[in-house]
Image 1 (cartoon, rainbow, N blue to C red):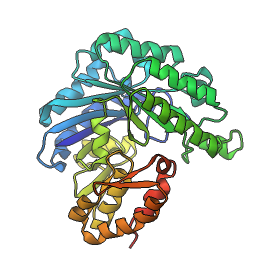
Image 2 (cartoon, one colour):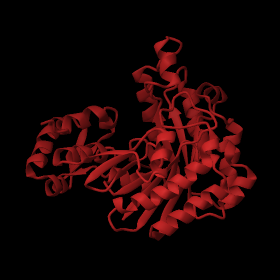
Image 3 (cartoon, rainbow, N blue to C red):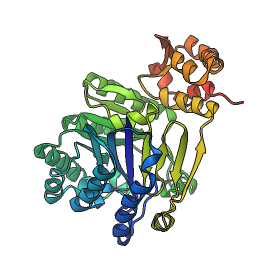
Image 4 (cartoon, rainbow, N blue to C red):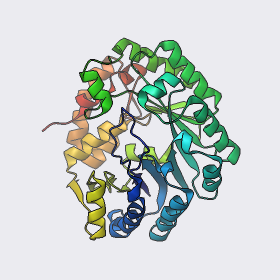
Length: 376
């Protein structure tokens, strides 16, 4: 069992908050496609011998590629890997890319899940974030996909924007629910160093939202989506029954995956690798047959800490018996001891030997995770 991630680095323009690696020069497209296919050949043995259960094309903006480009990539995937007949295949898209012709081409490909970056249904928010689409285009894109038969749709929303009111956030949630999509991801706006957003904050041109407002928005989101039948299965992710993202869940459950493309990460249970975050360097390395990667062999403590950080994010939590089996009784005992104050304060719960965050714990999840990490 394994996953495959392909990072498509191209964007028509950059959003002010995004710190993912991207490039706006589409003249590299053909070289990139050739390089990714070559990387499949060079690096497929990184994974243990197993069948791909999930394939995810992220970015960047994968919908900047044409259906023909996507077909070329998928043909290569099926050539170089064994893919399960029941594999989940996800494509990230921008709403304004989903023209009638694009969607028609998409229906001829094996994608069975679409993840759409909407972020907000408020025009002022979209303009501020430097998004390419309008609210109307977003709603039209969802409807177009649904009519085509591609109904397994996830949409992204962002809350905590400067000046965003509680009423505006509720309107975003209501609009998302009205679209009848089975998966919603909602992220708090982050001021990542190096982004335009961060520079605006540092210059005093914008102010981040108060923590109390952020907590109120997050709490309201959980209540509204839970009441609508969504499962809150990861801090930022909600799904109707049967629509939990299998690919993203594999990251949080330590299932091996191979990442292709510039800046992509890989994990096979023993080591973690990451490709160079430069399109030119990536291309040059692959074309010479020497991928430009860095990596680390995971020691027991690092693997334990990873398991804490990823497991506590989810509704499946951290099973202490599994911790003991994988990393030893010493670390399992340490985890039990450090978890006790959080259990006493009802920030964690322990059921069937599994630690999970309570509703109150969700709001300070970073603090709790840090408290359970082992620092030699």
